Image (cartoon, rainbow, N blue to C red; front, side, top):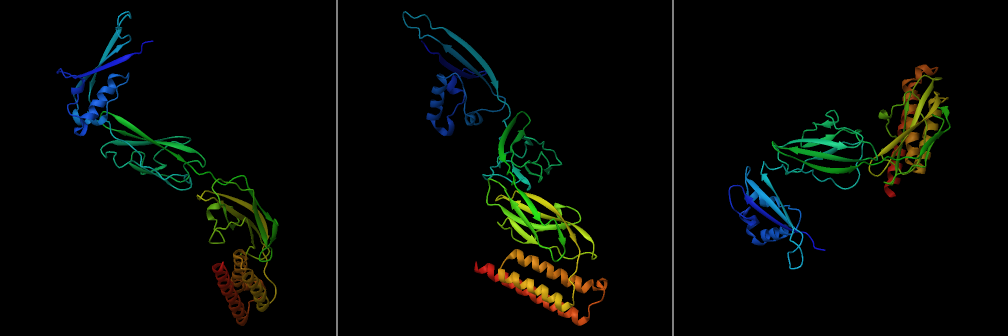
Amino acid sequence: EWQFTYQWSCSRVGSDDDFSECFDVPLDGNTEDLTIAYQHYESTAALSYPAEFIQQYAEVGDQFVFSLTVKKEPGVPGVPGPRTSSASVTITLGENTPLVGIAPKEGGKYDSSQRLFLDAASFVPTSASVEWSVEGDVTLTNDKVSPDVNSHSIAIAAGTLTPGFTYTFYLTATSSMASAVASISIEMNDLPSSGSCYVSPSSGETLSTIFMMNCTGWEDTDTPLLYEFGYVVSTLDFSSFSPLLRTPSNAATFKLSVPDGAEEGDELDVYIIAKVTDKLGGYTAVASHVSVNVTFPSGDAAAIASSMVSALTDAKSLGSPEDAVTSSLLASSVLNSGVANSRRRGRRLLAEETSTLRESVVSGLSGVVTGIRISSASQ
């Protein structure tokens, strides 16, 4: 069976140039480049001439006639043919299509709780108008993008994109006669999931009840998972959450006691919060409610101080940051309440008692902080 053969020709309008003369000088003075391109296009059904040739050897407004002749049989004796068919098209060169590209991003996933920055590539002309768009479950609008969707560089507001989704962003650059589009795909980090956190007991008293929060079953592809714990009083507000330990830990349990902070006999609504964070910074926060009755240690200042210092000493000997934090919070609470609020406790502490309480608790706090710091450094 005879194959199709193709013969291209090209001429500038108003001249008799053949194909090889449509673009007068070979690219970079290399005659081989143009010869190879010309020979290739003689035997293929598609003509795709290098843009560099056109940009270097032609001007806006130039017209070219490209013609194609297709043959089926070779025209040898005993074989009919050749059968031929021809077609031509006139091309007028317009303004260059603007170059467009998106600056590459580092590999990996991105955290939806952080702003996402996208930049047009450096070669995108500043004279071209640009517009950003996205394929996914959101629409880029100026209230979500800074400074706006028509800027070469943009920042997408935190919380706009959905964790776990993959988005394709498009940058369209438009000149007076043409436009071009570039795209980039961005994968958003998924959040820790499938787990739970619970607190025991569900009720207790300030200063004396130790609440234990335990987190189990949390999963994420970006390990390790780290945990932070804290609490808020009265109203559940995750934005006001402040972890009790400065550094997240891989420990999924935490114990704490709620300091004094209201009139004795009041009942506090306390929300103990756990924040579970993956390696990329994606996090899930959960809360458990406990009811806490406000109490105050009985006895004189010396007895109160002795009890607090004993707890601080135990925390120091254990070398546990969470024990140190819990005991320090309690001691600080007693110090503040015992001194500042003693008028409502039945009697005002004497000056000597206040001094004893303050000196003992401050000494205990200093000791536990120093002890924990030394213990952590030795590890």
